[in-house]
View 1 (cartoon, rainbow, N blue to C red):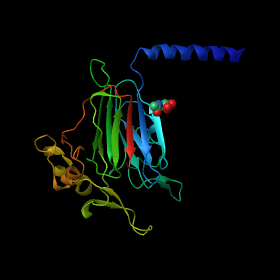
View 2: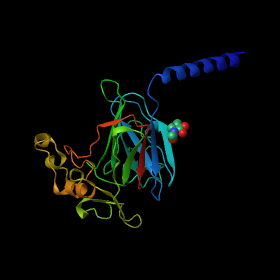
View 3: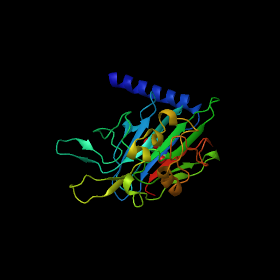
View 4: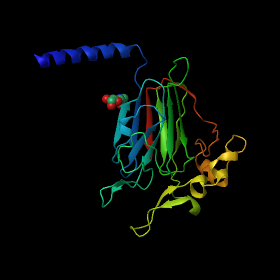
Length: 257
Ligand SMILES: *[C@@H]1O[C@H](CO)[C@@H](O)[C@H](O)[C@H]1NC(C)=O
């Protein structure tokens, strides 16, 4: 009897949900694809106070993908891939790039730079129009190539990305390498000027924190030359910055395509 009641309630609530959601715009999926020849650990960080998606992180084997429905209300956050992750002798989960602090699931925590970031803003217009903005940021450096492709959107919905392997050309002073003495040294990340030198000027802090005083540097220009559509310093304004892609049904984020 108890189970019949439970089943009835379940049916009632699921049909109610179906009716409620049919009023709104159809769901949008975020699909994350690993085209790299190695496992990556994607991480998703919502802006403060917003929903955590997929527990904030998971592992994704080579050539695997994960597709999930994103909130159908205003949501802003960033996605990156962690690389070189392993469990150390004390059982601690660690990544060479993008680490969010000992966990496969990052919750709402941010990650260590350098990491290539995809920034996404959903449903952000005042008049409830289904607008999506997205961009690739190299402001915190680069770890692996990524591209973002919207599907079935209307308006201005370009593919954006940074598909060049900047680890191969990264200037020596910006290189992040694997820990010396633990096998062959490999460049795993390319730091921003801010990440490498930490000056107010390169980090656009204090007196440099305005559109007038925060400027490109030779370091940000290295990233800009390779990937013109990406943001490369705090007040950068790439020509292809997207602000009006209407109702895409899917955003596909491909690492290493
Ligand atoms: C969207 O995500 C849902 C939930 O994970 C999944 O069942 C569905 O297949 C996805 N749709 C597409 C088009 O990938």
